Length: 250
Image (cartoon, rainbow, N blue to C red; front, side, top):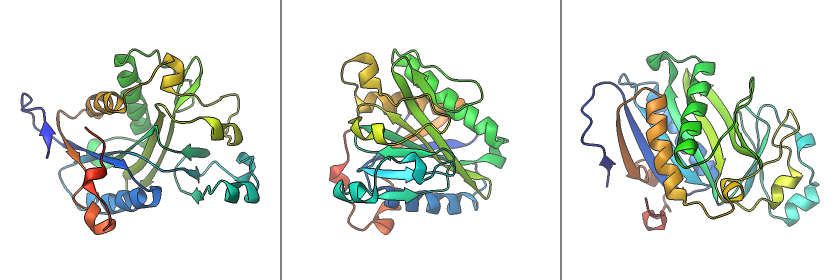
């Protein structure tokens, strides 16, 4: 069932936010690629936001290498930790439950966004959402990401195909942080990863973070209409075993 804000009657592109729950990284990447393909054939400028959590996996972006992973092949195997090489910006990232991934599918040319301008808007939307939730997020000149007094809270890494942006950001809400000690997520050095729950020293509701992010990303992308859905219509085609009853509450 979709939910929207009926009090807003506006023209222009719509944002569709899809809450996928906990999904395999590769399955979500397949969905992103399909949405990028479909976006290139659309004329309405629709933006799609995917929100999900991933089972444990390590990804290595365009700025990453094996040198950023302080675990041997044997240690990776003993931990049953898969490594996935991807084409987004950034170095390495640990993905795991308790971390919220947000993947906007954005047709840049339709909205008149440069890649840098889009990254600025994505970061601004995340910062505004965290501020609403009572945090004091920090940014650093010349770098993309969000920090707090305990360390880096948000990592950004996007890719662009046919002038459509995908991949996006991961927000450490309340994940287990142990594996981050063995992975250099910051290629510039000097940053340790932290989480919102560590910063506040109490649990943070994932649903509250998602809800704030939807509204502030809609604003950052200068859209006014949005709809929120549980799951995605393409999911059955891409992952036949998907069970919608496993979705977390919206």
